[in-house]
Length: 461
Image (tube, rainbow, N blue to C red):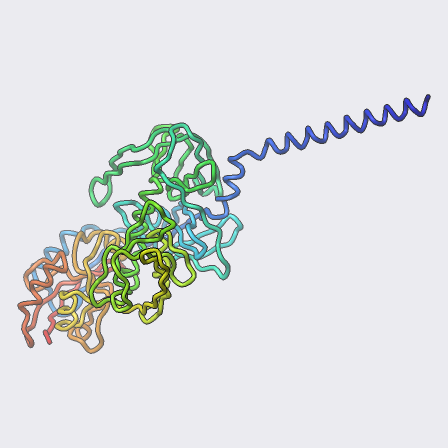
């Protein structure tokens, strides 16, 4: 009888122990909320960004010979009182968008930066390079190099955003690395106007959230409960609490397609225009083929669907641009095409992008490779005070331009007595230049010593 009671007692103790352990496990599992899971997915892909900005004294540094009065007037319009040289180290955030180390952030986080450093959540440090930027969209692309594939965020869509759904902001507010704030999606399609050195910039379609977005969160990811990127944190309203804004991911994707343009960045010629389809599994539809291009020579046709490049499945234009950006002229691509329901494999040998006619004239007569100076290029070159001009992207050896010391990174602002703002304006003058003529040119540039102006006389060949 005693043994029976002892057995019953032990059984009750075991039941209580098992129940307590189960209850403990349940409490523990309840702590692992969807927010925790989402942060674990995205946290390793968040980049904490610090930059150094060199603000140099502005001063006049004559280039060659005497300066024209016209050019002096232009230069003096922009060069006022000198500024003390100093270095700032602002802090911001970014997010890795693929395993190769491409990072998206706000343009204002890295504008005017002379050095960009990135730290990931695992403590690894990298020096980043600027790939391209767009100050109007306030987005920039950076690149870090890692010997191993890097964690990256999965892009969602802003088409199905729901008012009131849970959102999470990650970033580096006030230098506090790997910080997380949560809230809800408060509103969609907000329109705000901000002042900038390019004038008033209008942002439309912004996401509003009450997740805290503080200085340093800029450029970091706003994600949904599934850990998908739905926006890039961009702005807070001064003297307001719980009102932050993010650039929706669909707008981010559209801008990235332009920022990853392999023809502009790497001067690669493929020769097709492609369109995304509602059914992404079909690939990208070829909407046009340039006559004489590598794609034309390989007999790619309008209406074909590109499904793979080499072994990479291509589902959207961003994948298409990013993949070809890795290549160089002379590289061969192995394209898989769906043509009328049949799979066709085509080899395409990439070529160097051909120069338009104006660029050809600049090369033939002056020995210059040129392009329009865009606002983002002006900022990258620390020439934010130059509103327009023609950027020199290369100088041919033993050319008229090389003989007078013109260099890559210089900007043409005057040719003869004419102010030059675009390649088209330069082209109109190139057409009337004759062999042996001597033309006066005005140039500006920036380096570690400051911002400079120059003046030279070039003999046309």
